[in-house]
Length: 322
Ligand code: NAD
Ligand code: SER
Image (tube, rainbow, N blue to C red):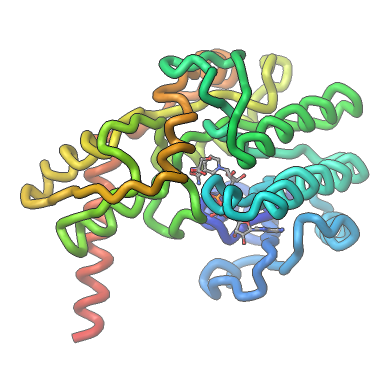
């Protein structure tokens, strides 16, 4: 199976690449991103091409050259960046997706496209948000994500294209920093806890949002594309979640390992408004039943792992410097 990723250098792509290479082989995974300065260690093992996902001709040429049969379309602007650059967000998130779907249709590729908790809005039920419910997002990011879900459904129904996807919650990881989202605090807090034993949070302490540790996000991306299509009723926008917490609660779990850790607050009104418009916690029954979704990490296990990995890395860096 030859696979192509767009947005391969981002928070999700940079780790999904490793899992895909392990499963399908180094040469089977073709990385693309708009950036022309990829991290050398990421592109050492397999092909990389700097391509804008809106450039259909360039993408088609690469898909044909490598005989690609599956596309992980990860290129997008995240919520906070999108709010600052709404025109770019529409163009990259919607026209970029449409370009990828057209390339996929020409070459009969399956396509994975992540949606988000951002596809919900203030009048969506906030607790145990159902799979199929009201979607009236108030952010440009959310509007592009709902459009993407519908566009992928359309390509499946109209052209029989094998489109699939999940609605990711905030993703937490320790390899590549997040790309400008509202949930970024939940990553930054671990880096700051290990380095400085304190963190100044841009969301209020009682703001609940769904979150997921990166190993579970990767597993979801692979499992849904490997799932038996006959079992899929929803295809493009499966709710998936692993945990729901607020900054105050996350700080409490960090204090189990770093008792002197302190959290203070300096609220960013833009990101707070975005967070307030999103669910507190998702219900992910459809993903569990239709393709066996089951996360491995809760807040406790993730916190332990994040702090262990980051402490070792920073100690090694300091050791290297002295
Ligand atoms: P990211 O911002 O870390 O990475 C996106 C990548 O896309 C970057 O490497 C960027 O250079 C690239 N890119 C931007 N514009 C491009 C263009 N025009 N052409 C080609 N590449 C371009 O984002 P991520 O966190 O890796 O997110 C991947 C996908 O998952 C996105 O669709 C995002 O909406 C979705 N998602 C992410 C999260 C999260 O918490 N990270 C949560 C829900 C959904
Ligand atoms: N983590 C993402 C964001 O905050 C959710 O899609 O933008």
